[in-house]
Length: 444
Ligand code: IMP
Image 1 (cartoon, rainbow, N blue to C red):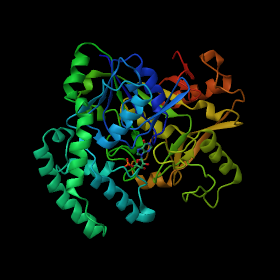
Image 2 (cartoon, helix red, strand yellow):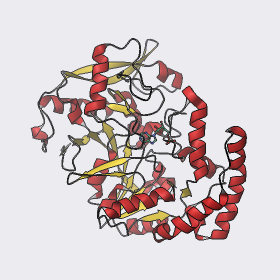
Image 3 (cartoon, rainbow, N blue to C red):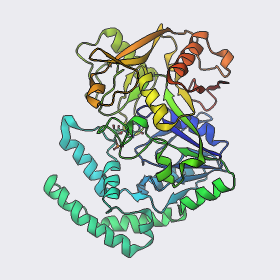
Image 4 (cartoon, helix red, strand yellow):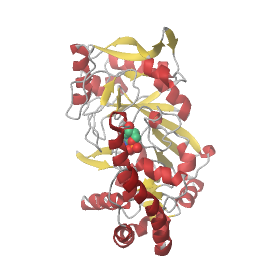
């Protein structure tokens, strides 16, 4: 059955967009199944860079039907600005479909996300402040508004008024803020947004099944990543959806029997934005928004951390924040292989390791003198985990122009072979630069 899922296997920002885009080429349909505009996928096509937050990567191909599934939370204002941006750059967006069952992000959600983070101070989660968590919370509480509600102004208003009553009380009593105006929100969503997004609204479950039944190839595009998963990630430092491959079943309405290939995307090192445990983290120089190195970090460690951030351009596409860098963590990856039933790995940004004398891979954790090769079940152990590294020789030849496995320096090939041996699934694709053509396909 021709369904492929692509997921992030670390804490996001693995460069999924690049390989999703590459795989999308051979697909008829690309479906997003969770998350919202907290995602930031950068695609580089013919030297031109496209930053997508909500639209599936396949939107850049005219023959692909890009689908925003029911599991996504949609801010219609963002959908409009993104489709307008794409059209202004010559991309045809008329094939886009948005599930009527997807939940809407409303101004309340964004406001409460921002204010909650502010109130938490040092204990903040580091969210993208896009209203993602509050929108999913309302969905689970069965008080959310869905995209299809826009199609019935009376229903939309009724639901909005009920929600506003509660949210405005929270804004006033918990956060000491002025209430949001229901009329203004209704006018913006119904009068300004609806006419622009109505042509996209569809029964996406039927569309996806029609495509699968017709033998067409469908790609399910994950956003965020395995360790930001609400159930399987480093809770509470997670997002509010299920980015693991299983999220496809609920977020797009497709049972597991349809899925025959699950590609996990992993960066050749690891980064994370926001708060939360990170066993292989390297210190970096203090950044403008308060990040500072650990007191005991060596100058060598800080230089390496800075190398990953600066050479790897590790700044959030959505927030502009400097990401926290670290060495590749095979313990996490083994867990990601299990959680997603990965059939293969795509390694991105291998070129960022160019020029390092040695490269390290975390093969196990030491928790109070006990060696763990699989993720410890108790999160306190993850906080206490000290990485046990294997060190491999680095390579000096730049990888940017390599297109065939034979062109990889021996040390880079040995590194990839080591990774796949450690995690137990083949590394089939390797990114060696940001451009669409900068990758190597390995025959394994
Ligand atoms: P939220 O998804 O905005 O609620 O943020 C929850 C956590 O997920 C925070 O640590 C965010 O930094 C992280 N996060 C959300 N989206 C992404 C993403 O696309 N890449 C990396 N981290 C993300």
